[in-house]
Image 1 (cartoon, protein in one colour):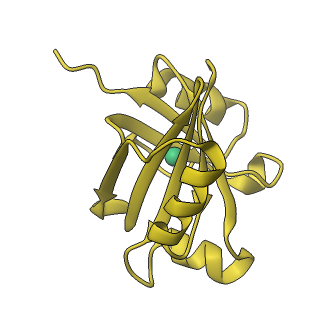
Image 2 (image 1 turned 45 degrees about the horizontal axis):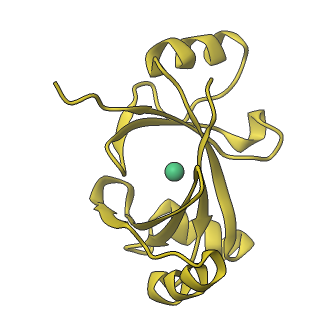
Image 3 (image 1 turned 180 degrees about the vertical axis):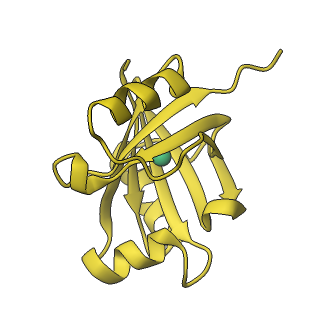
Amino acid sequence: MNKVEHIGIAVSDIKTASDIYEKLLNTGIYKTELVEQEGVETAFLKTGPNKIELLQATHADSPIAKFIAKKGEGIHHIAFEVDDIEAEMLRLKNEGFVLLSDKPKPGADNKLVCFVHPKSAGGVLVELCQEIKIA
Ligand code: ZN
């Protein structure tokens, strides 16, 4: 795995949270994206080399809605950048980690993603992400 690619934060209202994070980091949202398949609306900020992803549920069945109902707003996942997501998924599976999908899925910000179950990763939802290279 390479660097931490971003930190995902679950929020109930992305507009309110965007205002707060813009002030906090003193920088604007540079991208927003709806990931229909995952039931999330996202907004990204960058500070130095670090990226923050704000996530708001788009419907009640969204994993973000369930997370907030259970734990409230806050840090939702840590994403690590990988060069070869399929190889990394296989490696983690062989190490006994529980993956939330069998195949990488399209995520926000031009990435292929896969999540590692928090139960197998010390209570932290871990996201693997690999940039989709445009040929
Ligand atoms: Zn993420």
